[in-house]
Structures are given as structure tokens and as C-alpha cells.
Image (cartoon, rainbow, N blue to C red; front, top):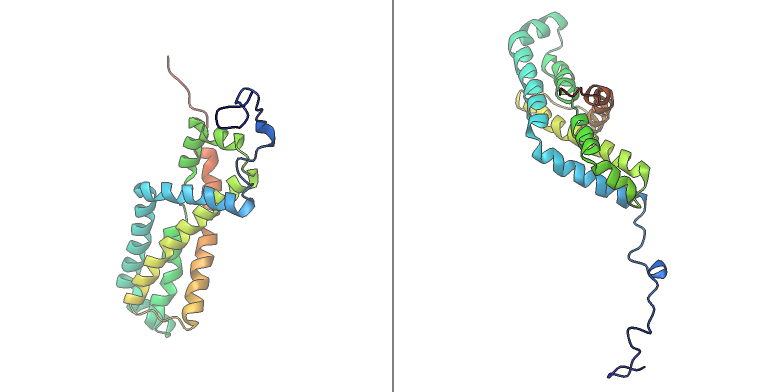
Length: 192
């Protein structure tokens, strides 16, 4: 039976949901970007995971340069002790960063299971979180480098050397969440 407007009635019209595309597949890179953006948003809310490593790296740089600069420069006779102390300060800032607690909380809250039920690629879940960890370590490197520049450190390799140092620092911070995961995911005993 035709409706008033001349079309088919809704009772006679069949709508096959299996053939209707609700969206196109996003692809691996879009999935990685989606997971990475969510993880980075979580980092911005998790100040206690970001501020202490930055303070520790800056603190040790200032203390080591302030107390040992004259001794280091006269003993080595190079005058580059401040530049020599910059990589350890960056390592202090990026080593031990752990978002493993946030990942375990996602697993325990069921968020990770819900993500696995979506058509997102499994490798995108892992790579998106890794990208966020690399970005966090790289971002924490920048203030330490700026403190070094304020103390008079010069980069002979120029801006490309600074960018390479930031990338290497980001990659250096990558294994920390993986090593902290077993500590955060240990079974918790429940008391009656």
C-alpha cells in the first residue's frame, strides 16, 4: 500500500542493517591517532605523573652544575661541564615515567575490553599508548634543555641536534611503562 506521499509504506520497506555502512574503516594510523589522543588527554589530567620527573631532572641539573661545575671544568680542562651534565638530567626526567597505572586502571575498569570489542586494530591500542609515552618523554625533555640553555649550554649541532636529542629522549622513556606494568598489575588481595 502506498502512503499519502506516494512512497512505500514503512511496513513494506525492509531495511537491511548488515548491508548499510555506518562508517568507513578508519585504518591503522587513524586508530593509532585516536588511542594516542585519548592517552595524551589523560596525561594532561595526571599532573602527579608529569611534574615530579620534570622537577627531579631540573633539580639534579641545577645542583650538579652549581656544586661541581668549577671542579669539573678545571679537572677536564674543557669548560663544557654544563653540557656534560645535560644528558644525565634528561635521563633523570624521562626515566621512570610510568603510565602503567593508568593502563591497568583502564583494564580493570573494562575500558580496554570495550576497546577490544570495537573494530579498532589491536596493534593500534598498543602503538597509540606507546606514542603517548614517547610524546610525554619528549615533552619533558624540552624544559630541561631550556634550563641548560639558560645555564649557557650551546648545541654545536644546531637545531637538528636539539631535535635529535628530543627524539632520542622520547625513545629512552619508552621502556619505563613496560617495565612498570608487572608491578601495577599484580593481583590485589581482598580482605573480607
